[in-house]
Image 1 (tube, rainbow, N blue to C red):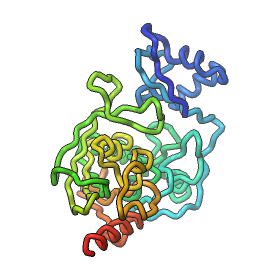
Image 2 (cartoon, helix red, strand yellow):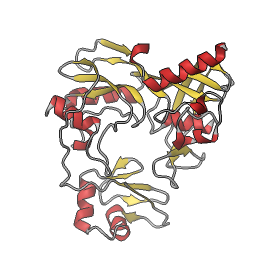
Image 3 (tube, rainbow, N blue to C red):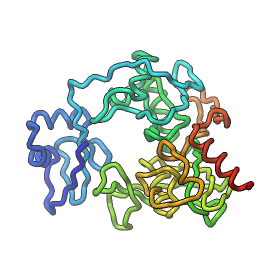
Length: 317
């Protein structure tokens, strides 16, 4: 993915700007990128005629129309399934959907194999077939998949309107001062690192509101076991919020955990962040029945089990 920032004072059409910046692509190719939804302006799809304003952020996914998402027989841990939706327990190490750099071995490849064409395609983007909300590659846990467009639209609405409840658990460095609190810190893409986000300046018009609730479950020396509830669903929201508070998620090298030393955590090798989506509730998009799913300790990701066991053993010594 290529990320560009519009720095000019005068407004310019999106397609004209990209033609100037992306010399390796023809104008017709750029128009196809825009038409196919492979160009985002401030994380939204726009037409080629969109007039850019100073500090707009443009992401170009650069996926060719020739790229095809191939169904692959990848094991899925399905918790619930009916004709309209799937609730699955995503394992660590797998992307939610294909990207410009990787078009195979993702959940979407697996879902296409499992469901065939019975997956939602609301935006006409084959890379995101069925995906109502995403989890980071190295975040495990519960997530929703829609089989029909009707189900997708309703589930997405519930998430947007904060009717659906999503809770996570994580181990973070340091001891949080409060037992529970609300973190309301806008986030913005880090232009120096196109993968990361960061806390935004108050006057940054590209900032997205981000609200996370947290509750301490258990305290250890130099570490805290925490439950999070998302009120918004920004990219890397929990990870960025905790890093900003100087309590990065254990194992999260992208957001600064390498700078923290701990007598127990430093000895444990994890597959990146010790973070898991463990609870989700929503209304069934068709029947309106209340649906609730919670992982039992036996279903947790092995990293969080290993880390908690080690911290508790050290605590009891």
